[in-house]
Structure formats: C-alpha cells, structure tokens
Length: 92
Image (cartoon, rainbow, N blue to C red; front, top):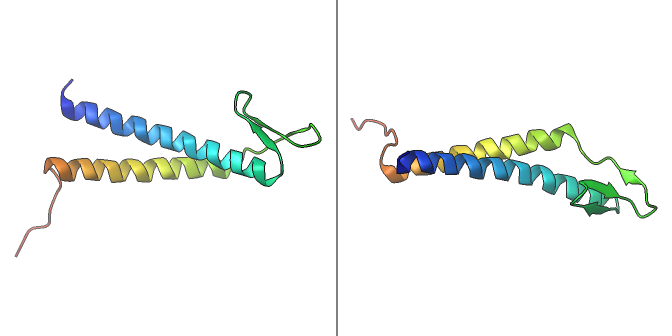
C-alpha cells in the first residue's frame, strides 16, 4: 500500500466520522431543544419527567450523508490539487 492510497483511505475515514458526528450532533441538539438530557452511553434522550423521548429523524441521516459527501469531495479535490493531478482547463 503506497502513500497515496493511504491518504485516500484517511479521507474516507474522516468523511465517515464526520457523517456520524453530524447525526449525533443533530440528535443531541434536538434533545436539548425538547428540554431533555442526552445520555451518550445509551444513545437516548431522557426528559425531565423521566420519560424517554424519540429524537431520531430520517433527515438527520440525510444531513449526515450530505455533510460526509461534501467533505469527502472537498478533501479529495484538495488532495488532487496538492499532488498536481487535478485536471485544469486548456489555455487558448
């Protein structure tokens, strides 16, 4: 495995972690907005009266995927620019 493929794997790992972090951040902020407390170990929201609230939403997963794809695209383009392999338009 050479250095370039290692960088691409690292970009993929950063992209995946950022997508999962976005989903977790959105769920935690929705829980805090409802007045609850987020329990990280259990992964659920506990309201002040002791009930468990459902805070997951399909748009959270979509937002995490969009953030991951956009970040991966930007990092990969930066990698191509840094290595000089980016396609440039022809000069007339």
